[in-house]
Image 1 (cartoon, rainbow over the protein chains, first blue to last red):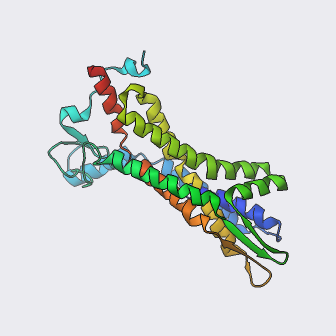
Image 2 (cartoon, rainbow over the protein chains, first blue to last red):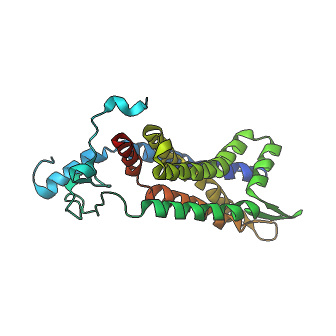
Image 3 (cartoon, helix red, strand yellow):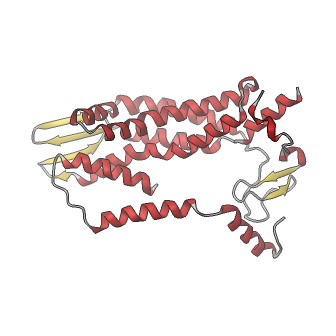
Length: 64
Length: 212
């Protein structure tokens, strides 16, 4: 949801731009980096591999 | 010739008395009620999957009407108040010359919800009538609806951000309109409908077709 929120932040910034001056500070740039790294991290998890590890720990044997 | 024929010896878990876990993909015998690895409930096919999906789709259709008829934003400024519907705000972006934003909002709040409702209805129809079923393309369609579903939350977030940012007493204020709740309802209902549709139903029909 972080990247969806980022796009909607862009849109509302453009809307506000017609009413007021905006100055982007460090929090905004770090939020962009946070959204990117979070979605990359979520996409690079190998779900099967991690569940296999859990299964090994629970049953103390290799998964079939 | 159907396109899925080249990987023909497909084993269907239900016929082998095996159930796969929806969370960890582990395989358990049909007699187990919970997964041995992650303890989530096991069902060979999700109970009442089609009924739930169709009910949520009808809910989404009903909510989509107030979401488009009522106003989504109410701006009160020095020059008087202004109210905008979803389509109205897209037209406003076009008038301002920001066509990229108009396209983003148009895709997120009109194409994605209607496309999702249409795609899921098509999947439900295909699950009932095997004649039109195209398992591989239907699976791709399901993946697409799952991928793009959350992007229609953009409009709700924009309204939430704007109405919390612009609250200058007397000078200017933006308040959310009645349509926001209905639109959020549409997004949530379609997301739940996507989750409650059991993809294995697509492949059951393929097997039924082959038996004939």
